Length: 240
Image 1 (tube, one colour):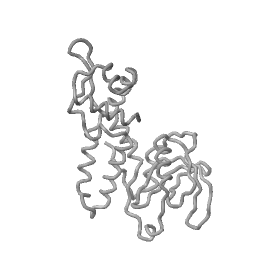
Image 2: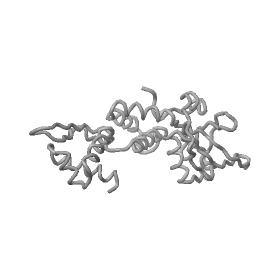
Image 3: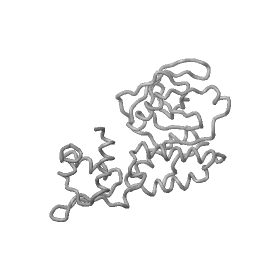
Image 4: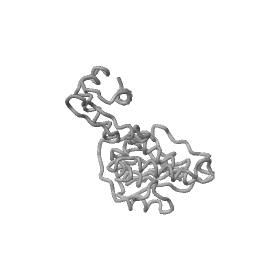
């Protein structure tokens, strides 16, 4: 059974009863007690309040009030929600955009402190700018593969290699530290440090070809580098 499905089944069982023993949970899900203990720790990391007491009347107990929407989502899911709300804020003429800030506040408030801090660090590297001009929108075609590989390189702090065609049509091979993301809907840009020239650069997503993630890791540079590359944009989440 896939991990995410097992976690969903485990949450469902914990909702049904407040006195589960780990051995009974293991039997129900067809896994070892060690796996159940590890799964419970992972659910705690996601924000669920789960207690365990031994002896008569004891067992594994899920606090009902801890079952929040954001608690049931992985880190990348919460980033997607926050990013979507932040983009909506930049387009106030869109339906429901006026409620975006309230949604962001609720999402952040519902997260455990440490998780909220980690997500805030990540989201401060995602900048939201004005929508792209119509001339760019007509030509833009971004590979879905690039989006997935960027997510991996960005969150795991690994170099991203790709071929890049500049505005004059010149093609070069780049190795980049992906320190940030600039969104100018519907186009986005990699805010990167080009290791060949040792300088910060913006790379428009529709001009990137043949991307792949390298094993080489990098240390995040200061937030000022990300902000300095797009001074007219704002972070998806302001520092709190």
